[in-house]
Image (cartoon, rainbow, N blue to C red; front, side):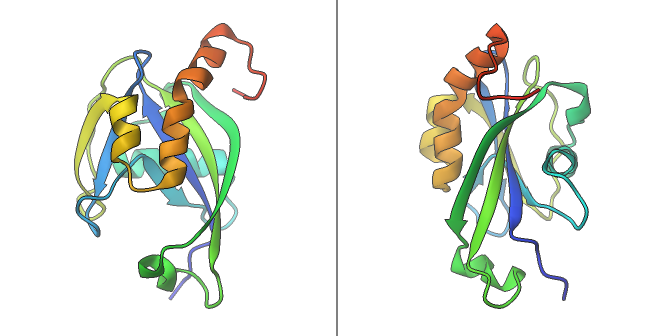
Length: 158
């Protein structure tokens, strides 16, 4: 078995009106999240974000602004997913990105990975997601989206 690398991305897909795309995990019904995924060998975080968005939603992230929020979260890996990582691996580091789409775009889910999707206001999305890192990122969305729009980019890189 090939183990996952304990480095991943979280991609918050949203509209300018701050409607957020959430997807429900097939292996854990009721677990809602933004797009996530582990880096493959030799990939950058940006490459992983683009690949995971395409695999999980069918959206081509190269066609829209994909911004590295320069936020990294370190968290303990849930026990039920621990076997995906090499023995002794207990924590994962996650890099957060934002992807702005002009409106609710069509979504094609990977059926083995996700059951359904929803577009919703960021506040509702933050209350629904199961991961604290995802909830924190969603709560930051209004501030970070404004920085991107205004071009201040103090903490962001395009």
